[in-house]
Amino acid sequence: MSGKLIVFEGVEGCGKTTQMQLCCQWLESLGISVVVTREPGGTELGLDLRRLLLEKSEDKPVAAVTELLLYAADRAQHVEQELKPNLAAGKYILCDRYIDSTIAYQGYGRGLNMSLIEQLNYIATAGLTSDLTIWLDVDVEVGLSRKRGDAAGLDRIEQEAIAFHRRVQQGYSQLAATHTSRIVPVDGSLNKETVHSLIQKIVRQHLQM
Ligand code: T5A
Image (cartoon, rainbow, N blue to C red; front, side):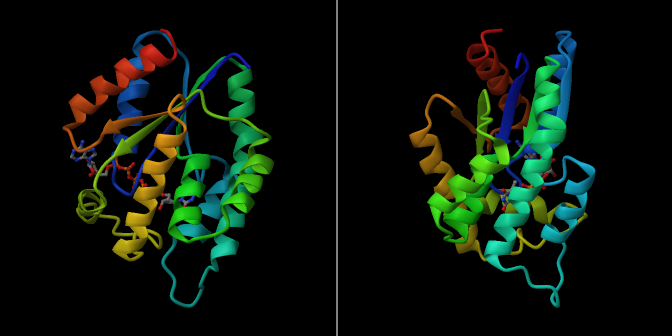
């Protein structure tokens, strides 16, 4: 595969969408062909799964294992339908969340079995890992307060207790400490332009551009 997979990760409201847009504009200005996608919801099937996963509905509870399997199903479809073909075509893919989200949210956040999650991640991705994962490190209170300012309101997972979001943040911290060559932390509390220029440097260094 000749393309590159760059993943953006972090807690709610860490600024992934904002930074992916800026990164896309920058890469395109260099003449690079870019695909922007996300999990959940990077395919038509995935959009249906995203709605099931994130809509707020008192009378439709989602069990933790069900949630894990739905994220895995979304990923399996996304890898087959979007990631593999675009990488094979030499594209740079900017992906909003990937395997580390499942480890952070379903593993650290929900407390599900880590080896089960790793197996499911492997099944869903067939071993496809990112070339670079940028972790936008933001305090959970800062991220959630940014989201509260958005008109759409908070989704099912954003409405979880603050202790859940803190466990997720701890998960990202552990992941970054373990996978130092793949996951690069960026201080997401800085202003948008500063975060973008830090990301440019990381992408250049990491992908030897
Ligand atoms: N999930 C996902 C799992 O539990 N397991 C999994 O395996 C996967 C794949 C997905 C949800 O699913 C969960 C995690 C999530 O709960 P999502 O679409 O990724 O949902 O939702 P969010 O993480 O909340 O993503 P958002 O798009 O809502 O937020 P972003 O992208 O992090 O933030 P962004 O860029 O939209 O910015 C949010 C606000 O902050 C401002 C923006 O203008 C915007 O108003 N902002 C800044 N303000 C100040 N300084 C900066 N540097 C700023 N950057 C952005």
